[in-house]
Image (cartoon, rainbow, N blue to C red; front, side, top):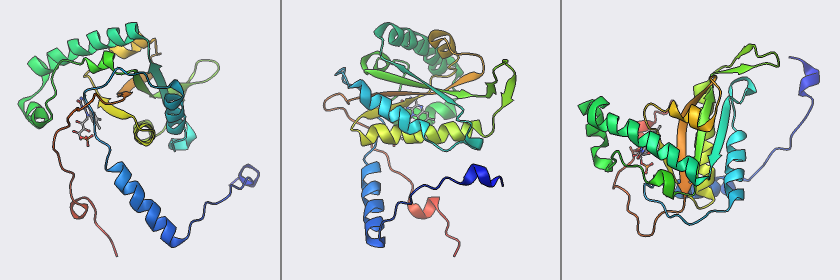
Length: 223
Ligand SMILES: Cc1cc2nc3c(=O)[nH]c(=O)nc-3n(C[C@H](O)[C@H](O)[C@H](O)COP(=O)(O)O)c2cc1C
């Protein structure tokens, strides 16, 4: 270990045990209120909220701190329209031809279809790209480690930050998503990872009645 590189100390955040319990329980109540919304209001949302959420995502841990992500915030109506047209083309093909029956069956309770008006109605689309490798100053490839895991964690923080700010989100994955590179002018080392659609929910919008697995079924405790 190179000591010289590790001489900066950061203050520890210390809460007493009661406070920690209370904070964890409050967070659980809060995060359980997050739901994927598929109908958005076109009401504008202050840009700073989006920037703060992306900065939160950019603070995520990543393999070797390589931060293998790029976020494109789309507010421009013409670009949102181009994304909608391209996504609906792929989704039509998906629902009509590409999707195996098993996949369609898994989606059937969610009421999703090939029409994606939310891509234009919601005030912001945040498109996350995974950098499969980096490029140095001479344009040579730099190997990146654990890119998928790192970008997944950053997206989790992004969704949590948006929810914390009072915004709704939809995680959208038209398949395939390569069209996003050309519409958004992103380089070949970046692969579209997710579109996070965000804004306020449409008034009286409904969400499917789904349940989450019980704690006992998702967690094993080794005592
Ligand atoms: C990787 C990923 C991809 C998803 N893709 C879509 C999508 O393309 N369209 C959609 O309507 N929902 C999509 N969802 C949302 C899920 O359907 C939703 O999270 C799930 O039904 C659970 O509902 P909840 O988010 O309200 O808890 C996706 C979620 C994830 C994590």
